Amino acid sequence: MASKLAPKLAPKRRIVAGVDSSTQSCKVVTVDADTGELLQLRSAPHPDGTSVDPQHWWDAFVAAGGTDLDGVSALGVSAQQHGMVALDDRGNAVHNALLWNDVRSAPQAAALVQKYGAQMWADEIGVVPVASFTITKLAWLAENRPELAARVDQVLLPHDWLTWNILGRPAEAVTDRSDASGTGYFSAHTNEYRPDLLRAALGRDARLPRVLAPSERAGVTPQGIVVSAGAGDNASAALGLGIGEGDVVVSIGTSGTVFASTAARISDPSGAVAGFADATGHQLPLLATINGARTLVATARMLGVDIERFGELALAAPIDAEGLLMLPYLDGERTPNLPGATGSLTGMRRSTMTPEHLAQASVLGLVCSLADALDSLRGQGVSVRRVILIGGGSQSPAVQKIAADVFGVPVVLPRPGEYVALGAARQAAWALDGGADFPAWPLEIARELEPAAGSGSGGADWALAVRANYAASRAGIYGV
Image (cartoon, rainbow, N blue to C red; front, side, top):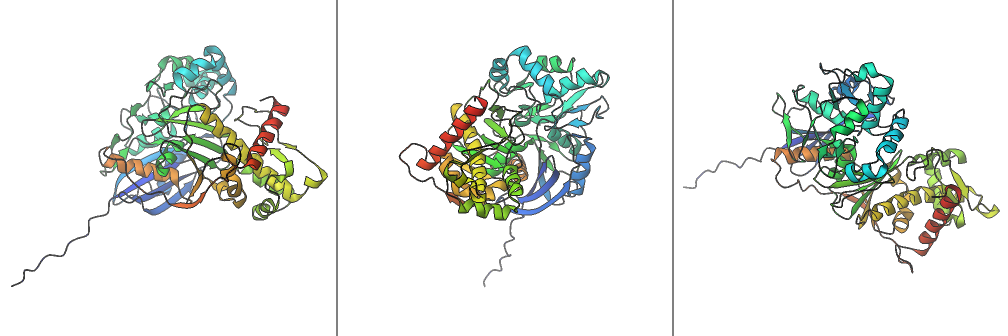
């Protein structure tokens, strides 16, 4: 008599969640922990401004479904870097959080560099202070609102603050290396805080969050959800993309960023390359440009066309715009450090003063500025095997047409996705498994671009000539 076997039950799907609390919004994704499949995305906006009550972040987290995670086993939080969340001994903010894009602390940044020297900051901390970094904002608070600075009990970053609230505000807050490395009082080289630098800025000691290992758990919520260490937004994007040695991410959004994960020690006294830590135990050297995709939008507006027509014009022009070139410093620039710069158009002749040439000139200028940032990474010993091109500007066919030739290496375009939130979810899966093997989620590639062969190193001859023209124009106008 044949035995009756009970039907096999499909294994229960393990679900993790990732949070991206950015300047503009809070996004919450749920993801299959074993495959990386995106299951759901919800979002809620943040208020505009560079100085924000942190309570708005919690309200957006709730509105995006962050407290309604039935079936979720683990949660990871990523957020905008550098923001100053200064709390009193009751856990209340003594001042609105000053965000990364709040530049009121520029004088304090300059004073800190002058006091200790750029070489010390680069060698011992990994970054040279600019107005974005937390330490400069604490110095601003001490100088301009000393009565509030005197009430500061602990200092957190946006992702620390959200994690702390998710866990019910425990006695000890936590952070991770990636976010701590953007404060200015944590060394990415020694993995230790520098309380002497914190005191120099704030004028007194303050409690700081404990720094967790990349796969360590921050805690468990009352609902039994494991919470991971979390990360800064760029480090989380690197996790979401699964980058390795030789991969460099070039993101063309409102601004531009160029970063990589590497074991190399970064020390750049010029301040161009910020020696941040990543969320895996390595370094995350990063450069940022102020002028990203907005360069293309501004040129389209000047030409009186929409961005789609702008792209058509650029594609119709000779690939090198016949020598017409834009230095795209329309809002000043951070890389190179030219805050007072303006945009420039060089190589103008009657034959090149056409809408097509102008559109292509702005595309060339944008991509050349990012290629310069890529060269700065190479100068720090970072291997550049391929570029992973992301961000809204990466979807421009005109950008895609020239990117591999100008960068001089293969370029891959992943399918558009929420890679910061995905990285937070991936870290959550890592913590859920107790820090075992990093989750092997596939990266879906939409397009691969190869540089054309040329007689010179690094790509096509036309691209080398354009980059030489760009460098000569920049040096002739600004001396750098």
